[in-house]
Length: 214
Picture 1 (cartoon, rainbow, N blue to C red):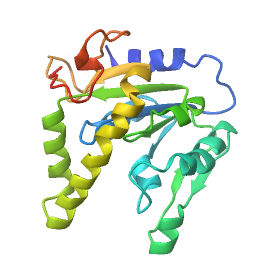
Picture 2: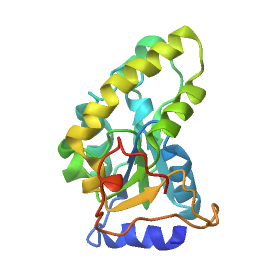
Picture 3: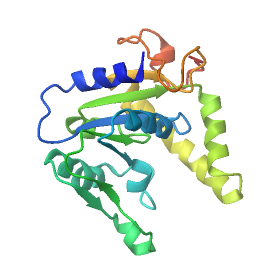
Picture 4: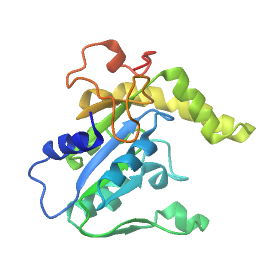
């Protein structure tokens, strides 16, 4: 499927949205390629923005950030307001900048592990789940976060919380679209996505413990 076709499918999933941006969640395990996919979609829609849940959760919690996201990101977006939010840990620790989305944005892609969850469902217009190989994603997560003792401990702690959370919420079953990431099928990585059938029919698309290589 082309990136433009994927965007049209996400747009069609929320036909009644007016006066505010469409809020699209991008979920998947750590190392699945969520940030890369969000950037590809953003580039295809000039008037769009990305919110990273890692920024919302910075020095907060691995997964217990739903209320912060709702009150400070999702609720203002649903009111059609411009967004300029500095989380409390940013202020306390002197982190510069803010999480910003300009007014009149067409799409806002919210990417991060755990964003497709029951408590956030009323605020999401459509969603994408990245399905990938468990071992490869754990390797990429360790490579991305470094191999110092502190970072290795961080990765280990993350993995201990990540899988139980994902199995409880089952985001792959709620997603508008399931995308292979990183895919091993032939495709143009600049213009195409490898997309699963609308109704998953195998364990490989319903359990992140599977060893699927799509």
